[in-house]
Amino acid sequence: MQTFVALLLFTLCYGLLFLSMFPVKRSDKFNQFTSSARNALYRQYDLTWPYFISFLGGYLLASAMVYLIQDSI
Image 1: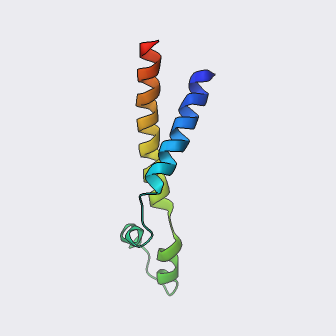
Image 2: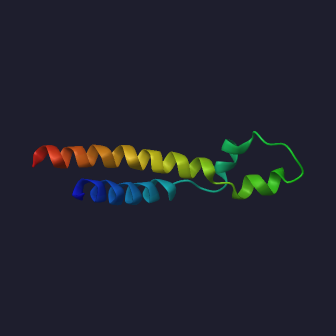
């Protein structure tokens, strides 16, 4: 249970850290797959890919940290 809580906390912290590095203007490059009248408004506020990428990177870094901590104990 302690390992799961540590993994969850590290994932949340690292994911939010990586998410803070994504500017809103650059996230427009990820969302060029839609084409409609609401395309401009949709691309401004759709942060699905930055959320996914940041929390995936946070999970990978957190799992490495938890592994290293558990290995040293």
